[in-house]
Length: 357
Ligand SMILES: Nc1ncnc2c1ncn2[C@@H]1O[C@H](COP(=O)(O)OP(=O)(O)OP(=O)(O)O)[C@@H](O)[C@H]1O
Image (cartoon, rainbow, N blue to C red; front, side):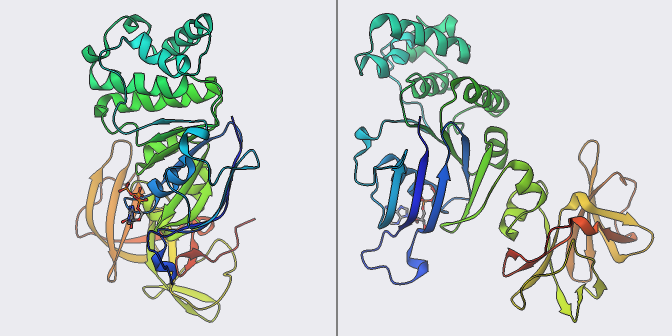
């Protein structure tokens, strides 16, 4: 397995790119350590496939280098990069048995048959498909076909990286959670460097130790699931991660104070920088219902099990709170309080408060 370095990487599909907007990938500098579990998370069109294709060698970047264990592989074709890939749809041979499908990547590399048998048995046991080993692949359900596809991606222990491109697309919703946690467990056992590409926050946060969040060709934050939740570096991360996402509220700076809809808001720490489009970010989990504070009107209450999502309007701005107060009614006049250590200022999208100490 390998450490992967992306150095000053940029890519444009245009022959003569002139501005930042012409680049599908803006400048990316990134180190992925050997054996880590990473997710590449972002909405459709943010550049995930472009980056994946650059790593696998299907695409040569317009600028920058890509290194595996400090060796420059930018100009190497895919077959010389020693990568395993699992795609959205199963890639298996229908006429072969499950056993032969799993053995294929090893036999292709002339691995001795006793080693092939041992490794196939090991992977089959991890994936819980041992009882299917002699079944012809054409007889498998789509879920099991994708499991075997994953097995083929994991069977070689000499690859630099295993890349998963939206691998749960074809999986039935009720089986998704099972395969999600299975993949996490597999990473812990196989200890390969793995990159998991998805637009689904649950898949990314379950699988990865480090999540790379992308928006419009740019990395907006790299962090652990907890870091992304607790202190989004960009409003996009706040909004994209969490359910419901972070409240991003228009704010006005007045001397040393920050006002939201006329009410003073206490931030986690001193504001940094100056000017720009200012917004306050607070997660619904840290918005409280109180007797005093920011006046609000309840517009909707949705029960989500142990908690309720209370939707309110503060002036012209919608604010959500996740609370235990499920007994509120539509139209009720209430007050909101923002937990100061969880209230952040953003300038032009980027965090602009010093963290609470
Ligand atoms: N072959 C291509 N030629 C020109 N533009 C492209 C090409 N492939 C992708 N793009 C553009 O580059 C940008 C990034 O696309 P990319 O497919 O990498 O995003 P993505 O995050 O993988 O999206 P999806 O999940 O929909 O595949 C988009 O604006 C897309 O339209």
